Structures are given as structure tokens and as C-alpha cells.
Image: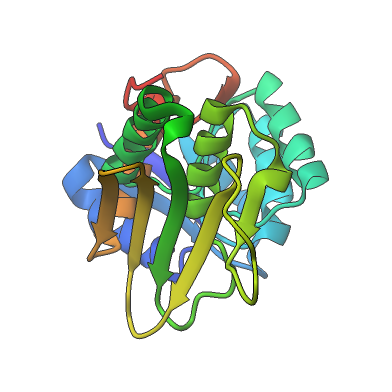
Length: 243
């Protein structure tokens, strides 16, 4: 029997990609909703809710999931710390996967970046470079923010260590600094690189996305996985067994 999905944000780029990929992944979109629709009338017919709508809509759809005991997969980003906390608290009632990027390759990049940062240590300077299409609204991307978080945690640094771009007479680069650089243009789906530079050698870990289908397939994989889990907040690292 296919997995029954309520898809919130069905008309967006990711929503359409998920709907297109679902039949080949043993999944069926039983309800496709967007702003202005009433998901409450459809929620009883689904096994899981996938939300790729807007930041402002996520809290409401997760509350609906919690009220009806439905697992949820969240793909929205850009929430404030307070918004993140409020949504995450609902994972005490339902299983929830929340990730800024559902690509299997990108999540392997997170894992390898952590290992590289721990092995290379402070002798290597680290930076994050990302590129996206001209229409992207935020910078850095959610994926780049996660890479920066991975590097900070591995190096034991706080958020003040991150520098977004450089200009003017910046002086010598401090050892405890992490650079973040965002490129925008054309129709780039998403490129991300963790860059490590030491004395006499350099390491680059890069992931390039060429089709949004990879994110849709990852979200559907997370949906199949999360319905079998107890209430808690999970990441795509958990889905892939990389934790």
C-alpha cells in the first residue's frame, strides 16, 4: 500500500517536484494544499504531512499534525530562533523530520565536513561557498547555514566567528574565523563547498545539484522513514543513519 501524503505547498517548485516523484516512490498525494486551502478537512486521510510551503505557515500545519497524531516532514527555512523552538517543541507529540536540504548527497557532505574539520583541526582555515539561481531570496542558503554550524561545532566556535564576505582592509585572517560567501545568478539549482586551506595543501568538499528531483526523492524517503518512528525531532542525518 502506498504512503498517503498531505502535501502543503503543492504549487511551489518543491511541491511540484514531490508530486511528480511520488508515484515512483510508493507514495500517493492524497491532498495537495496551499495558502487559502483548508488542510484540516483532509488530514484524516493521510499518513504523513510534508510541508514545503512558507515559513509563516509551518507552525499552523505542524500544530494540525500534532492534534491529529500525524508524522510530519518539514522543508521550510528562515525561521527565527523563537519560531524554531515553538515548532520543535511539538515533536514531543509526533515524529518530525526537519531539514534545510533533503538531498542524500548534501547530507553526506555535512557528515564528511564534520570529519574533515575534526581531523584537520586549527591548522586549516575553513570557508563555505554557495551558489544559487538569481531568484533565491535569502543568503546564505539553509544548506550553507548548516555547513557553517557543522564547522563551528567541530571547532568549538560561536556565531561571532562567521564573516559573511570580506571588503576593504580586513587585516590578517584570524585562526578562529569562518568565511561565508554567497553567489547568485542564472538558473543554478544549488552548489555548496566546504573549503579547507592549510600550509602546502587544500581540501575542497563540493556538492552540486542539477535537478530538484534529488530533494523531492529525499523528502519522500524521510516521509517513509518518519512514520515508523516515535515522537521526536529528527534530521536527515537520522534518516540516512549518519548520526
